[in-house]
Image (cartoon, rainbow, N blue to C red; front, top):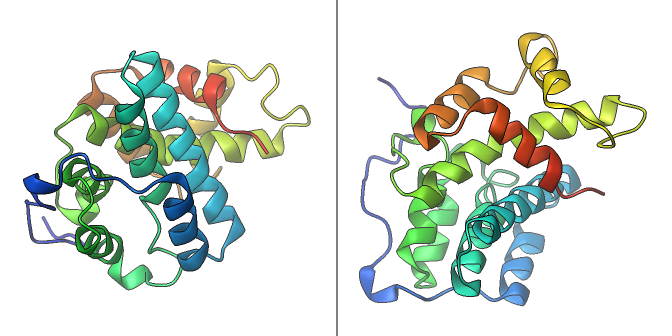
Length: 199
């Protein structure tokens, strides 16, 4: 299988950097320096918010919650300025900063058919699951007069079947991510709707 942005590697970061993370100020500084597109910034904040919400839902400690948040917040950091080097550039930056390899691996595996890296950990799989789906749900909220209010799973699924709606969102990736995570698309949609960061 040919990957358009294949990373051609399977190892990311170093085990000796376990526990090393960016703090909130550092991560937001990187985000604002690298990403000028406000819609993309909002998407990344949404995914970061969902990742943290899921880590809280699972009862993970604050350190783990922050790791999950960072993987979501920074997963598309290089897309705005360096689309031809997505997600190689952000991986190299985080490796240079000696960031926890689990965060880097999650980012590397958020699009397996593009980057050629399979999501294996729970954090990997949930980042993959929330990425496309959160963007889709947000697109649906924009077209609804009441936005997220009273949004139902069946409404989202109806739009998923409409290939012309938010056509850039891969239904194949959403289904694949659901299967890999072992969580139904309905459950994922419900979680995203309930926990999505709203403007």
